[in-house]
Image (cartoon, rainbow, N blue to C red):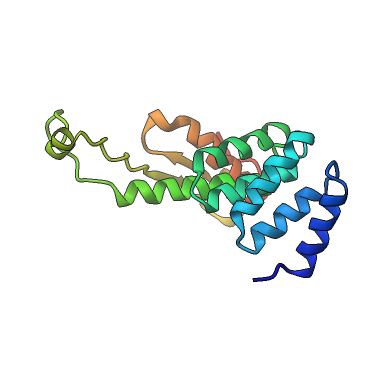
Amino acid sequence: MADSPRIEELKRRVQSDPASIAFAALAEEYRRAGKFSDAIETCTTGLVRHPSYLSAHVTLGRALIEVGRLQDARTELEYVLKLAPENLAAIRGLAEIHHKIGNAAVEHSVEPVESSAPAPHAVERDEPAPAPRIQLKVAAPASAADLHTTRVMPVDPALAGLEEFLNAIVRARTGRASAR
């Protein structure tokens, strides 16, 4: 299958000037076309010359999500948020990762066992225990006027760091700070 004219033009630009930042646009076009491996390779190569180009890190993170490399994607997107905390694409990408991780945990969850002993099948087959299910509660506002009080909290206190992340998503979507 032939590449689109846009991809062909960007490939020519990058080939004629390897130091060009056009690599990021090419990688994004690859990602949109579903050519995730090409997007990852293009970003990785371009970021060697332009390591602080945040939109390329976002494109790389989004392509890595698509191929299931969630930890690598998370690293890229968290890097972007350290330098640009308001970057909505990075926030959405991290939310998608958390959603995918949550779905994987639900698919692999088991009923709680009364004893503290590991599940028999995990011992016999030397398999890791299933991922815990993340439960969330939303402290909803009483009225639309109180929207700024919406908070998302993990039920398990051990996941308190997740609360800050989820509330950042709420703030990004509503444009308002959540209550503490």
